[in-house]
Amino acid sequence: LTILGLESSCDDTAAAVVRTTQGAAAEVLSSVVLGQTELHAAFGGVVPEIAARAHAEKLDICVEHALKQANLQLDDLDGIAVTAGPGLIGGVVSGVMCAKGLSAASGKPLFGVNHLAGHALTPRLTDDLPYPYLMLLVSGGHCQFLRVDGPDQFERIGGTIDDAPGEAFDKIARLLGLEQPGGPALEQAALQGNPNRFAFPRPLLDRPGCDMSFSGLKTAVLRCRDGLIATQGGLHRQDQADIAAGFQAAIADVLAEKTRRALRLYSAPIRYLCVAGGVAANQSIRTALQKVSHETNTKFAAPPLALCTDNAAMIAFAAAEQWPGRTPDDLTLAARPRWPLDRTKPSMLGGGK
Ligand code: ATP
Ligand code: FE
Picture (cartoon, rainbow, N blue to C red):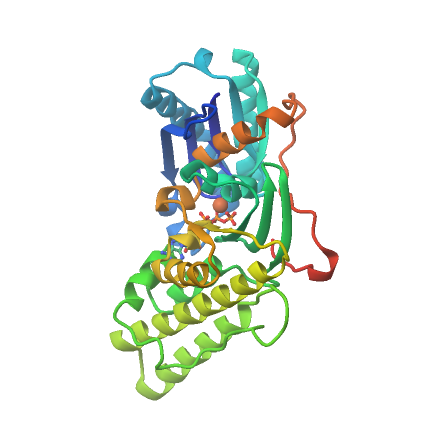
């Protein structure tokens, strides 16, 4: 199957072509991502209206580039996949409208894909990995454990009850005067820091289950920073680095311990542990999870950086994975700002977006 994917649910406009062949590894024939960081820089966060307009302007170019790089024309495709949610509604509508246009013009079937399913299925695009596996999906807007039993079978077994780690990375980076996006900048600063100088909390580790919370950690970091500024008149570079390292270590500890618990939930053990989403780009978090995987005798898979953050290859691939069991969407396909993936276990219900 050769599928064109479109992604526009946040601040990246993306198009990609993925080819799957029975019995062989899937191939990313092209993957184009146009970021919007500069457009939102002055506002300290993504402005939905600006994002939607930029997606509407750039989607055509993205599709053109993706087809050209793959050396294909619309006619060569088997289908067109698009993120239909969850995300910023204006952006999702731009993508869905564009995909409908392409589908109507070419007669190729249309598939609306859940953005989170895209992230959660990515390890099967990059690794030879059977179902079921445990997925820690950790990004700018989400943090949840999913048991992935099939391309459309996800069971949420816990997640954040307040902030997502990516959001916390971005906010702490801002507090420390680091550049945006904050995740990579904070990771860089932490390299020079002492993770043990400040004792930041590891929220909810004292409670059973796989739910997580990061807002208290954020407040603790803010207090620590304000305390230093009050006594010293400002932050030294070393203070910045030590706070960054302490904060990153707290997040890594929480994610690792909750992952251990998630793996222990099933009597027939899960043999594969995967991580995806933008925060999965963080090396110290990857290392902490790799350690858990080693301890628990599971195989670990973490997609390369470019497929961890938002991209359209994951959307095209998800549609290819779901292809055998689903009927295509028609032109009534709607954009959904909220679209939970799971059949949630009520006893473990957590919040999150
Ligand atoms: P969602 O997928 O939940 O809708 P999103 O699409 O905004 O959210 P992603 O693109 O998957 O999220 O990830 C972006 C987030 O990942 C940002 O918050 C960014 O700071 C964070 N991030 C990126 N690189 C790193 C890193 N090296 N360390 C920590 N966080 C990182
Ligand atoms: Fe995402």
